[in-house]
Image (cartoon, rainbow, N blue to C red; front, side, top):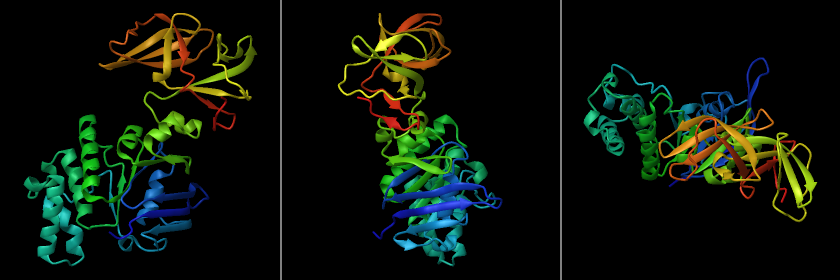
Length: 364
């Protein structure tokens, strides 16, 4: 297989008027990798994808595909195929005609076009739908046709721009499975843009987390979840999102204590060389609280979300306006009711600490 890796070197995009959407992005996507670009709306991830596709002019920097500099090449010469959020199917054409359109325009022989369409239809389980029009298809089927149109071109790199955002929850789950299966079948290099961190965590072999036109961190999903480099990454990945609490670390009789949001002081695990820093923020994921009988932070349950096998409790800490979330599991003995008063302790072994610059600290 020829090299299908993608390298971004200082990629920038500045629009007329001086608005910069992407600030010097560096990223290497390995051959055959499923790379997800994730971030909130307006963070620059789609603009980056469109620069790779050739649909946006690159203001500065260099783009390499398969080791070849394609920075100034037109889209048709880059060896990429893009799948859009809107499907972009021709309503008057059949599924087969839509899938084979680019090959026919390129002047490929009819037999070659038909063979490529049948092969892609087999991969996507569309064989029985080839003579239907788009209006006769479900949303998930239309998206598979759009993917099939990309497959028949045999590109070096597949680019997906939020392809599942128009689907309902059940279809999104199904299509996530289909996309993962497609990647295993084709062994293709895929760059996939989404704002949905669940999609990012379930599909990506690696994830690039975008924030304000820059990449905050790149890594495997669980590595980012467990070892985020910044507060932004920690808060963006995970559902419900991480609890962030302003703390003050103070010495006490047992060693060190922590005052959380001005509430009760609780003891920290003894650790030689603990280095208290100003402006410390404590990050605790909802699943990393422990309910205790005494010695914890007092809180009152204000809202409960019942999710079947699990639940999420929203609690107000005594002595502050802070609301924290706690994830519970059915049968765990932690069934709660609105108005109940409980005491919580963070699992300090799994908690994260952030300094004044929002970078992850290691106080122990």
